[in-house]
Amino acid sequence: MSNQMLKMAQDLPLARIHGWLAGDGHADARVEPDKHGVHYELRFFPDSKKLAGLFALNFRKQLRVRPHIHDTRGTEECYAVRVRNVAACRLILSVAPLGRHTWPIPSFGYEEEHVQWIKSYYDCEARVYGSQHAIQAKSVNNEGLEQVRMRLGQIGVRSNLHGPYHQKKETWAPYWVLSITGRSEARSHALKVGFNHPAKLRALMSI
Image 1 (cartoon, helix red, strand yellow):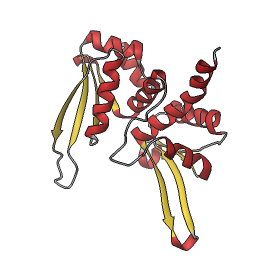
Image 2 (tube, rainbow, N blue to C red):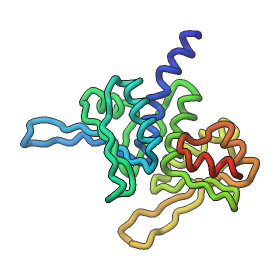
Image 3 (cartoon, one colour):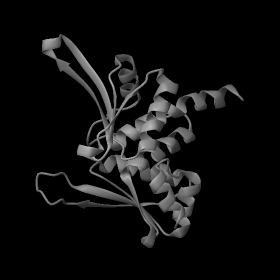
Image 4 (spheres, helix red, strand yellow):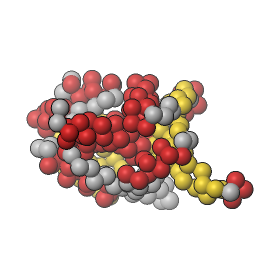
């Protein structure tokens, strides 16, 4: 394996972690005056036990830190994965911001890192509509979805961005929808991106 390929393989877990957090997680670095310092915490809320395990596995590979996984399906219908290691949190946040409503795709050095980021993000935010032969991702982050659309186009997956759509409550931010439509485009997505999420992967393969 060349040094370039080795470097990419080493960085792929970081791309996956960041994509999952952009989809169903967040990162906090908040000042707590009573504790005389900054409190760092990463939180990920997947609806799949497999995703929770994959997140923890990639975190251990990349950062040598073991996240804590809690089954909160009784109250929140998901798993809660938490990391409070300061060095690990700082590294993740250094890749690119992880705001609740704004996030960019990080500027990775290799195309496969961008693909893995999108795959992880889609694990969280995309839905597969088998009868419509469609894959859709919804977000209030218009600029972020536009970056996803552009990256998908660069690997030959055509998608369209629609919106803004207003939500039921006026105080809620409008959202946009990124759609991949048609059997051929769904097949292209399956071959070039796909899912880690088991239920979404099964739905995609049924199209």
